Length: 222
Image (cartoon, rainbow, N blue to C red; front, side):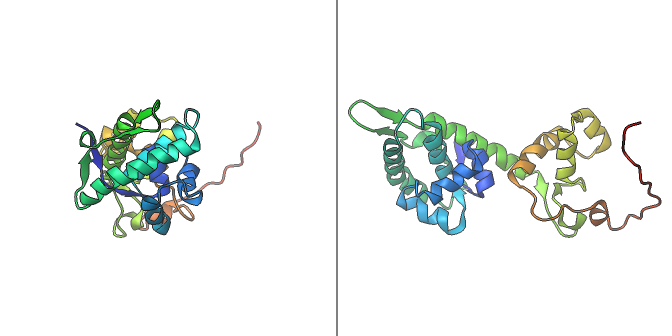
């Protein structure tokens, strides 16, 4: 049984959940690709629910196999059928993918079933939700910089270490309060929550710390 997390996501988050580029998520609205039932809600706040992510994933991943009109027909029928079912479940946190009918007949020959795609999308939404549950942001802790729950370790710091090639073992030894799960979640969380504005300096993150000495090193060929 696959549960679909009922959530509203930013374009960046939705891009991960749908496994498409962020610009494609915006195209769903800008090019009015979504069915009218879903278009206005997405356009108003640029927030995308998990069902919309399923449709977006289908539309862009099947572009080589089906015409634009065929893909829009599939999305329209599913919006009528499943969209209304999900609206009834709006007060719940998840919906069972298997209880919904994901099959649409395009014509007498072609029939598509989005159940597998819906399950994959639901899985990616659950992975993201799990990563987000490990992160907290509070002005009283590190000036509001996102840190792992129960620690003072900035998520972006860990993601930077990973991007530079540092091993999980070294990171865990440097930050003993972190779990393997937290370290593994850092790159995904940072990817789906891009930083806005100027990155905070070391002093901003640690206002109680004082610089004892500094040294300027000139880089160049020896």
